[in-house]
Image (cartoon, rainbow, N blue to C red; front, side):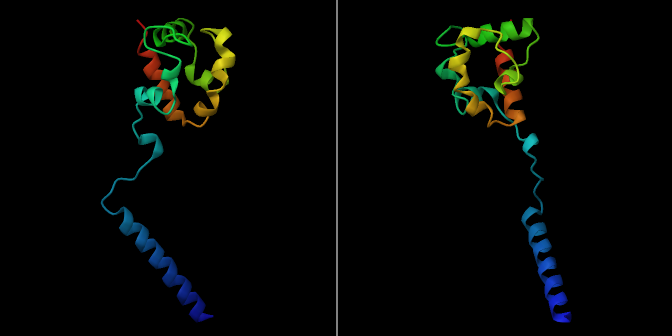
Length: 124
């Protein structure tokens, strides 16, 4: 019994020491502390540029139009991208947009907020 206890103690100590060595001198990483670029998400992971351009309608409304409407109506782009709010810019395009919710629902809250900030930066 003493051997088992001693072995357990050694294994516990060794695992704690390894974890401490791995992180020594490095800042702790926190997912919410990682800077997220809304523009990069919009152009890349979000694939938003397939339907939205800054100042002209393509398939969906322009980013400037989206920003204007959401700002005027005090809407939440994050809530819309989570399918927690109704479309307020162009409801006729909602069915087309629904296919992209699979992408936006996989995004973290920080990523969605970054997207929203990027879009709202186009409001005048």
